[in-house]
Length: 414
Length: 224
Ligand SMILES: Nc1ncnc2c1ncn2[C@@H]1O[C@H](COP(=O)(O)OP(=O)(O)OP(=O)(O)O)[C@@H](O)[C@H]1O
Ligand SMILES: [Mg+2]
Image 1: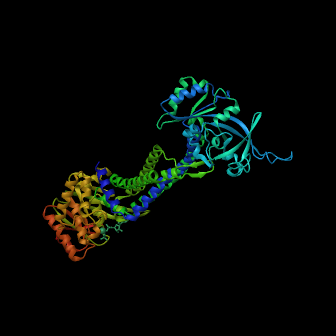
Image 2: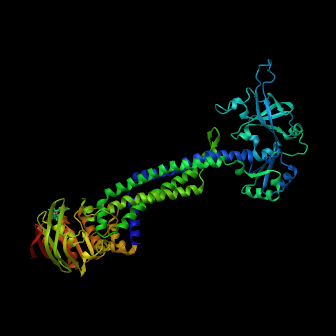
Image 3: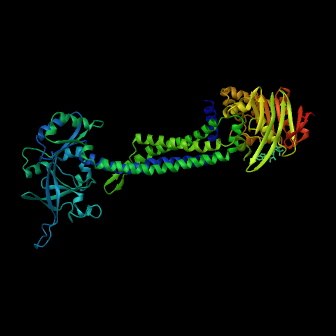
């Protein structure tokens, strides 16, 4: 107990009367280490999370209801839709008709039989423009031309990944249409019949479920498909903030709607792919973080070691006049604890005050995702604790090494 | 109060043996002011380190106030030094980042004194060495003589049974040395037991008794 008091007494004064620039440098190193610890993992995981977030906000909503594997539409769609519209948790919902089709661009210029038609296959999607916009803000993804009006006929929105000029990188250029712009006509080949439509706008997204579709107004597609039963293929629900998607899924399952459709929350609907890379990236980030941690531990070790070695004489004198070794060790452990604590406090402030909001506003433009900085509180707290613990050990060891030395030898500088 | 019986100290360096203290017997009474003198290399410091528990003799016995020192564990020795002994070193040995008062407070806090009690004791000790008002000065802001008197204040603040000093005036000019020695005399008058090493026989005369050492043996004991 007295050792602790004396340790604290000595530590406070050593820190306070230490050279300002030395202290600043150590704190700076600790801050960088802490940021390194959260940043690398955070960016890697944020990459996946950015993608997952876009999937949720641009496509699946919080709950995605789709065809059962063996069925070609959601049975009793109208009943299901009127049911979800009654749910107090549901802020908005949208339903989509889906049909695989072939889009053809250059059919007018095909003269000789040897000319290759410019075709891609795509999912034709019928949407209620205003409902869809409430759930996925699809209109904001229109980068050229205009969004659909409910009364539009013969107009479509086309996904950017179906067009050569927007295709991302080599490889994805395959299976795209050339020279299709807003206002151009394309032909839709749907089963036995075909229809010529005009491109009203281009939808750009990094989610393929959005960027590789062609959008019709639902009433027109319904007629084309002959879906007079109003059965749809996809329903996306947007819940009020804070509402649990799992609860809504459960409620629908309780109503036996799972017999008519596949009902999944946004996370399940993404499959295991995202969670798998997220796990991989977290592991990768943690190993890089471990290196950073080792560097920080060594830095603290060296700082305290040099400090203790240069003060070996004073340590000897303290022991000589009867101060316990524990008190002296505590004084050094507290100093390194202080550096780590200040470093991680500054680091946390920078992280949540600047970095996290910055990357949320200005995501990193990766080809497959808009990367954000993922820094969940629990992870940060764990990292702060790990850093503190490491520095405690790194501060204790050198102090102990010097304190262990023979008292008289230390005093006499032998 | 201190009884040392047939103390031997042998330094071993590989096969070389350096027999520094040879069968020394000393007795120092409570309230005595003893000066140890002798040539350089005679073994004065070595003797003081043994008597003051900073080192372990190769053989022999030390008894302080009926406590047989060699039976103490290392922690007990440290605690014994803290509570019963006071030290003044040649080069002041003050912690540079602590003020005069704080330097004196450290051992007091270690003994469990409250903060305010430790502080008031420190101020009183500073007064005893004529340094009232210097409590907030850092060692770097004090002169050599002042530093040494702060060191003395630290050594006496907890009223130790014995005060040990190894050439406390070696780094000081003669005038400053006088003030330090006067401080010792004053403490002695108040009943403090003091064991002091010195080079200068003039300074030794301030003591009550002089022990002369040569080549690891006591060659003369007795009054000045
Ligand atoms: N650690 C050691 N190893 C070997 N020999 C030592 C050691 N410490 C001291 N000695 C030797 O012991 C002898 C006595 O040394 P000591 O320091 O006690 O002398 P002293 O009387 O205090 O001298 P001075 O007046 O110069 O301080 C010297 O010959 C010294 O070389
Ligand atoms: Mg000496």
